[in-house]
Image (cartoon, rainbow, N blue to C red; front, side):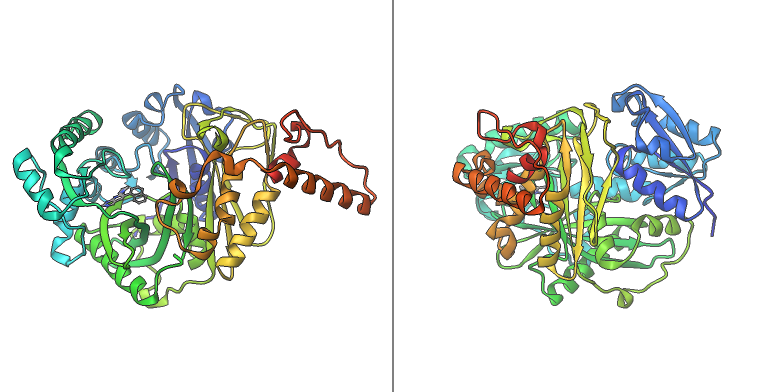
Length: 500
Ligand code: MV4
């Protein structure tokens, strides 16, 4: 056992706040770091101490590992929490933190490194009999030999970069005729993006669902899983909606995937919170893809259904405490959804929209949680991820969680920037989503910007309904004006948000 008294959070935004809140609850002092663009950010105000680490660009501030370690030493910090993104999966940083005598709240540098290579990860888990997509076990080098393997596996196949992940550097090859060209492109892309041109082949699973299992491992070798999250609603490898539990898993399948995930964690002596990613095909066969060695953006849905605070567990593990529960003690209660709210315009090809949050009113009430890092009046900096908030709802069952999400979207008031809230509403109301009959192709299949444009008849009906309600309430109606396009003017954003 070693007691942590002060944590530096090497991150910004909602996740920095998320971590500091738990630290504070545990009686641990917090240190924020910030860039010049984040001087007034909420994570800076929340922390006990805050240090500016450089310019607005990530490379000039949040990615300055050596300087961040210097700050830790100067302020007598015991432990660093890396959050997600930035330095969170940088084995070199984790190793330097350790060498400086500071606790890295996360797995060992060796586990980060191993799981950073998809091929090394597959090799490491092989002895545990983990189901994997048919393909090559080693990097392919020779085009002719690779063509032969691809033909054996059967087209279509995928060429993936070993150093990639999250969809980066992936190429689908439909037939032998374009294999050579695609392979060359994949190798050169991987070389320039990751400095490692190793690529491998996998059979292409056409319409998979993305299921990931949360695991926790302590420093005594105990490992448990905290069930699954389904993240099939994605747009260009960016997750939009996540939920727990998945609407397709049976208890038997959940158990089988959970056991596999624990074995993957065992294969790299995993310590802390991690996530094992699987693909699930139409016949409910599952295949191990990769392991993410960090706390993920979507961890709140797991917290909601298990009643655990994952950051608290991470910190307790980092202090060498044994897990305080066994697998048999864990149960799923209820259903949770997370909608990521991005500062992007869904009607305009999801173009990032920067600007000031003129109005920013969060939804509230039973079963609604908002994890964010902004307040009304703040500017969204252009330098970082455009995610402004995670809207999480929790109900007794999936329908209740969906109903709460629709209500919460309606209640959320954001003006000054366009957001993906109307897009979220569209997905949550879609029959395919509601019925659970969807996969990772949902957005390709069902979304075009036109679906967000209301029909004129619908607009008239909605405006009539609002005016009628106002008369009944005997309230002075707000000015309901319309611009030339039939959309309500910005002065009545509550309406604008609702109608879209
Ligand atoms: C695949 C696949 C189909 N077949 N592998 C994308 C992210 C990366 N973690 C793995 N990905 C995929 N790997 C085989 N053999 C399809 C995807 C994929 C995907 C996976 C999960 C969620 C969304 C996705 C969107 C497109 C492709």
